[in-house]
Image 1 (cartoon, rainbow, N blue to C red):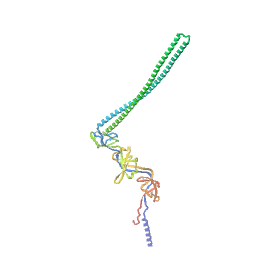
Image 2: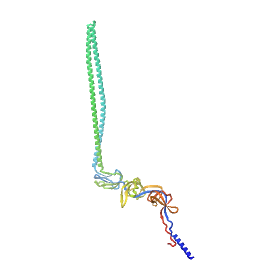
Image 3: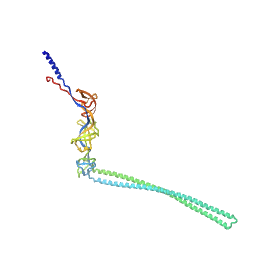
Image 4: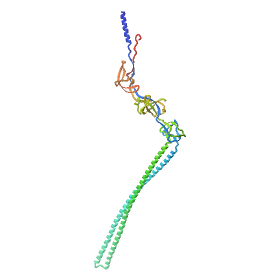
Length: 460
């Protein structure tokens, strides 16, 4: 019985020791799937810089009349530094006077040209009027000649008929036995009177015809003279128009040359001073008022009061950036201020510093941010690449790939791990969007903790 009891004890001890030495069930760290926003961004550090930097040298030497000092602010167009060079001022004054003379000459030439046009117009009208008068005179003279011919023919015919009648009467008287010598003498006297009247009629007709013919010839001569006078007047007017037109061109050419000369002298005068191309601050000034300034060295340096931020972006992120993207800015000097801006420029040329490749970007802060910026301040930037709102998300390190598909391990109700296929969307360094495969509230296993083995009854 003792041996049997001992055997039972040993068997019980072995079973208990085997059971006690088994590992406890594994424990998991999990993440509860929930909804939220996923923002993908690129961050970097940068420095506040001026949008423009200019170094200017004088183009002419001379005594400095006025020069801004280091730290002074200025507006666009304001004179930064000027030197005394009166020769150029005199040349500009002379050029302005020459220009005024040229402008007046052109004005006079245009007046003369207009007068020539007016004279030509008057000459044309007068020519047309004279032509009509001459034509009418010729017509009138020709009509008078025709009328004279008709009247003289009628007068001669009438006188001839009177002769014939007188002769017939004389013949009748002579043949009549009753006619007395006195009657015959009277009849013969009538014939003589009729013949005299006939000769007088012919002479009068000849005189009238000659006068009408002379008047007609004179009218023709006058018409011809009027024609040639009109031609000469027209030619004279056209010649005057051409001459005054040429004078206008000459005056315009002289005016153009005077304008060019004035511009050239002004350019020379502009060399006496340097004007600001933008609003800004003087970063350095070499000369003071009254000093003699020469050429060939920097006289004044300026920076724009419009600031930018320069930052270097790692090559792994540069493909995500584009000009115009919005940027959030914080300054070490104003940590409580969140400033806004946008990417203005991305350098196409990389930098390589200690094997790290990066690209410089320039950020333009908005106008409301400019008042906080000072040259050389340190800045931290955040560039928003993408943002999705109210989506399911999970820790990015919990997602893994197998055969081109993505999976996560989900903790089941039985405290077991279950492999679940998912599809994903946007992501950042911490989280990734879950488009399908999971539901809100699912527990994703992020890590597994193995339980330690239990001690046996002997403490081993």
